[in-house]
Length: 312
Image (cartoon, rainbow, N blue to C red; front, side, top):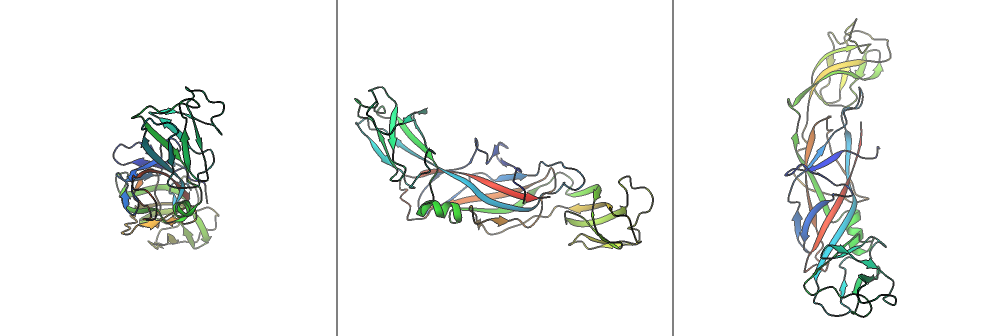
């Protein structure tokens, strides 16, 4: 299975998402509730490829990473503490900001002065602590404090990473017109002298010909032959001894047309039934459900990155 690099976009802005710098943002999520992604994902096959690499097939969706962003308002008191919802945290994964300015983690406030923008964070207990004004600066009253972090594999983290939170559903196509695509010439798979097969197993509408060369000169071995629209196997009209069949055919894009969501995680993957031809895309719907046992009365912002594995 190849490492993924198919692109994903927001359907409303067509901005690429799912990357390190632009994760898929579910916004504010509450415990015990399902939050739908407020936009559809457009999974786009940008691989122009050569003869045998037009369609991305055997598509697999899984969860690559999840970030939690928690937010509080400073009350201006010394030594304020805030406890993360999903503990323990991945060590060093946090980004703590006060009104958008990033502060620095220290082991303790021993060397901090009144203006030091420092904090301490216990990755096991999830307790975030600020200074008392003498040792470490106090966040200004009314300022917005945020922590963007990655939960470790705890009771909540395992649910996130393994299967229980994020769900996806593939329904709808965004084809390059026309929906029926003509493959001018493609290197196929030879089964024997009487049978060949298209590499991508598309839904074939018609076959124009099978030749033993890329220029389509000489014998058209498909004349008087037939094909199986579902398997891509072509029965030749005349025997071909040459090793490489070059095929011209017309196929149509097939919608997965899923009606139910599938849970995904690092270990739980969802396989899409149909390939994506080059320069075409699928519509992917996503949602996240936080277990009711999670302590998120005030809510947490959830961001994820999806892995898209595929073969050509």
